Length: 318
Image (cartoon, rainbow, N blue to C red; front, side, top):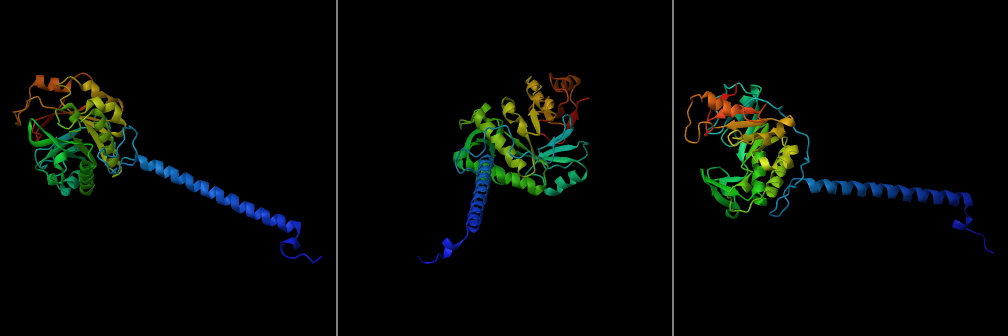
């Protein structure tokens, strides 16, 4: 017989050592591959909750009340005093309030910086649910996304809030809020479902949209509030840092918004006791103050008495 060589010449101990090494390498590769797949699946799941554009006309938000980004720069406490001026660019900073709500488009970054230099927080207002023909980005809206006009506001129409195109425009508005240094945003007119809108808007669509707006705001470091929309509070309150309400005392519905106070989140509350046509700097009557400030369940609301045109004039509850 010829002498053994190569593999057959190796000792049993050497063969065992080689087999053991190969086995360890296979196990290590398997563990590494499994971990990688697990991370990939986790990231894939997170992407499903992101608030980016989905590429279809239903938008990309979900109906969840759980924020995708819970890191919020600013959460004011219930009862925080405020001032709101939307008629024109802010020209009076003398009101001693720690929160100012002003128009996103009309006010320059310098005004926002001035307010913040005085120790105030700035909420930047824009309409998230209506088309306004005077805005600088009005031409960006597709005609198909524009619904019926608002009876009391010329040049303003309801929007298809599920439209991807509309949501992209709103993302740009949020980017503008970041550029100007806003602390938070006040997206108005999210309650088209409660009006003749011509677009078939529903509460479910508004819930989706408001949560989407919240996630987009939070991802930019902006706080955000719910404007009116009392019937969807339970579905969005976890994503909101406050409520902005108009006329809950007049319509006897302040108890609906008290859920925010229970969560130690402000209800920035506005009443217009002078009515639609009277905008002056005269004080309201004692009776009007009482009806605005002492509504059921409105304790600790941040109530302001304003002219309907939301100019500088303001009165506060005693």
